[in-house]
Image 1: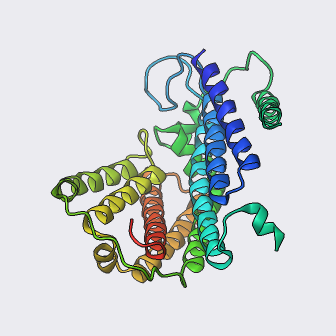
Image 2: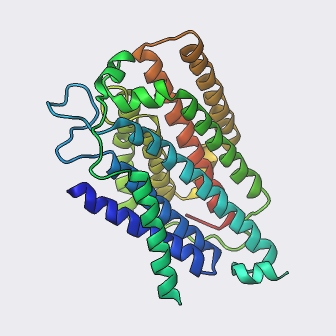
Length: 111
Length: 212
């Protein structure tokens, strides 16, 4: 049942991140919310690939069924892409702040 | 209003999660051991990342490189003009960096080179190498470290790693090469590429905004 609690935690943190993305007006806070939501999604996929008592998907690590290896491999991709896109988004925020002198999304939309 | 919004988002994410998770109770997993044995490695995740789903990994590396090029391009004109804050003078950080840097580098190399046998692989090794560079920059100051690590040369090394990775992937995908040596080489190349990208991000952000 530990995977069930991990699933609940993943859903909660994804919802929290999306809530911060909707409600907060500062761009850096929005990116922080995106970060938390992405962490929730990653945790969700990893928890989905785990069962109680499952062994790691490595040959020769004891008896019993193994955890699913495919979501773990795809999550590896997701983490790296998340890091790269977050760095790019933060660079864009820096450039935007240099040019417009604000990080408020509503003020940025006005002009 | 905000509470309603929060509840609505939670409900939407929950419905999405139930949809992704499928019916309850969930079906049994397939056995990953034949996949790993088919690629002649021990770690099934490595067999999927660098074997079955090599196209995904290749395009992911390309996306990573493009994002790092974007960061370099966006921050190239922004240089911090104010006074740089002084590097912290505590001997603790410098001494611990001297002590820890070698073991961290060796551990990163080990994680990259043994990724096909157990937990590890190129991406975690690259992250470990990047954190070693961050420790170095924190201890010695970004100016000194970036003078030592000449960035254009690192940049061309990163592109060379990507080209070699594409060449290796062509060997695996077209000629059907299935040896552990290909996995070790690919993991080392990915580690190099991820570490140089992480260093580029670190360096550009700190030179646009002062110090680490």
